[in-house]
Image 1 (spheres, rainbow, N blue to C red):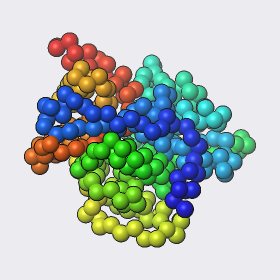
Image 2: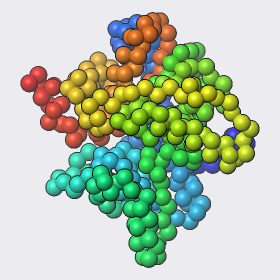
Image 3: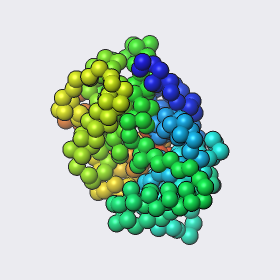
Image 4: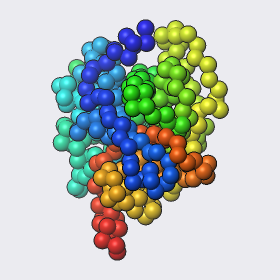
Amino acid sequence: MLQSILENRIHLANLPTRIEYLERTSKRYGFNLYIKRDDLTDIAASGNKIRKLEFLFKDAMNKRADTVLTCGGIQSNHCRATAAIAAKLGMKSVLILRGKKEPIYDGNLLLDKLLGADVVYVTPEEYKKVDEVFEVESERLRKRGRKPYIIPEGGSNEIGFLGYVNAAREMKEQIESMDIHPRYVFTAVGSAGTYAGLFLGKKLFDMDYELIGVNVTKDPEEKFVKRVENIIGRFLGNYKFSQVDFDEEEIEIIPGAGIGYAMSTDEELTQIVNVAKVEGLILDPVYTVKCFLHMLEYLRQKAVRDEDVLFFHTGGIYGIYPNKERLTKIIDGK
Ligand SMILES: Cc1ncc(COP(=O)(O)O)c(C=O)c1O
């Protein structure tokens, strides 16, 4: 049954994504660092969201929807990926973005607009009641004869998270054939669907690494632990799947927002510059660099040496562009 659930999707992403060894970083820190290149899933729809959208768009099409609505921050990778897939499949997208229209589009927002998305800008206060905004916008669309489909923030529900159950299966095959044995697997947590999928995948496919999520928001970790439990619980309930046993304590989500969601310190931006120079790899400012830095700190505190560690690069490259002024100063040493 699991096999057929995981095939109930539209194949959109370039899969499997490679697992690469980061030689110089590994030598420097004394453990073997492998990176799963989910930043290479696509160009316009690159990053982790496309894996979830394969399942969500399948559901939308089954329901004969012609317009997808979703929401996120002004530089949301998820919204950009949704706009890209909608355009590719001949559908319309409506993005509810927390923020203000700016005179010149940049980063993900520039791509949203290029990809033909309709953008509804809302204040942080309005965003807190985003379900109401979804309702108003859906009603407006229905009156115009369209058939809306709502994708929740980050695509993180019991449908979207299957993208990362699938990624866990893919990773298992890869680590077995590469003969690597990750003791720890790290991923950034923004809306927790990626973590939930990897967590259930680890259980279903019998893998024994510790999965550590780095919470890049200022919301408490407990909120995401509950969300992971809810997503998995709803999935198991829907499919009347035999119960999968796990303890809440196994869901390990650590704080990692620093000064705030989508806010960067000079240390974080400097790390982006360093990893780019040393490994030819671009981390993003909102998710992956924070996850990377907290991974290093976590492993330092545990004095981990000579073990295999796997880091999910979940994408987000377009997020560097709105940071171009600060990055220029750091690169030029000013
Ligand atoms: C680049 C990137 N990495 C990680 C995440 C976190 O994934 P999730 O929302 O499933 O926790 C997101 C989205 O929120 C993202 O855009």
